[in-house]
Image (cartoon, rainbow, N blue to C red; front, top):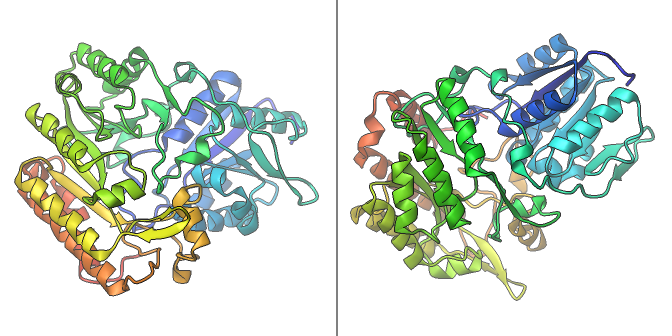
Length: 484
């Protein structure tokens, strides 16, 4: 690509299938961060964001309309096949367009992307500085060989992978996402909310823990494994969003309480904004949760906390290296309840792990026990909402390596358009598929029971969204084919 005074870039999400009701809740923050970083460092740049709400046909037409110099596609593993198809369609229409993939799938499985699509390059890991340098090199016609953190296809078709790129040490130095690229009303936002419209932010990057099912290890090319934005920086972005009309914010960091002092400081900073019609929800790990933290959350009007319970079996929690106990989960929920904060439990069905290289699996009795445990916790008033899905092996996770080693991935699931939590992707020794389906339906009934008992489910601002979601779950429960 020759140097141009005006540079046009399209950043995009693959089309969201109807079988995934969550895909259009929020914009892709990773892409909005990329856009903001490019704007700060490059003059005369035009950036367009194509979100996941467009069909394949309309998406490709938009790319043709914008006629970009570079097309960047965010790739996640559950929707990889859709991404491959999209790349190939775009390349067919604009053969000379340089296509870059980023995100978790590009980082974990770049060879799969090159094998299945005509992508030209993948950004590996954190993307802001890598994509910026890639854009500059392409603009000036320089070689890509000296760019850290990429894998690319050269003119001979050979795939070359460069050295790892160091992580950005200070998250505060990264500009806020380019919120002006989106229309807030294009996104459904939080399905459970005290106010609308809602948005999501990221307060930290990384995770200190090693749960076997998580693909977080793909981001760990160096320490520290966890980096935190300052409370002041977070509060500044929150105020920016508030001034743009946002009235509820989901803090979507993996967990807010990896560093307890920092978490308390963040919620204290949010409380000091004194925005009495602004609400928050966040993700917490079951340990550590203290009364001081819960009180700080309450003062900041954080009303809902999402907790990865995963299983009601201590054997399973130990096997998947969750690092918490049943007592930790109950203690966290009790403290939050005492401070008037509601809890949303995430549950995963049919886990697999290894002990001294020997395969272990969660059996049907343990899965049933987990769902009964959630019911008991609801009866005690300690859990308000829950959702459940089958455990899925994502590239980059320990579970994925275990599944490959033990031939656990169902052949029928390897080439589907999209993998959702309703899909059984693992074939576990000694576990019959009909039992797995039965337990999933039991899980849906449990979720429905908690939903019906919660007064928040009937709030006027979210009732339509909740009914649509309930209809989606009902189709699965009745065995009706969900659109792909």
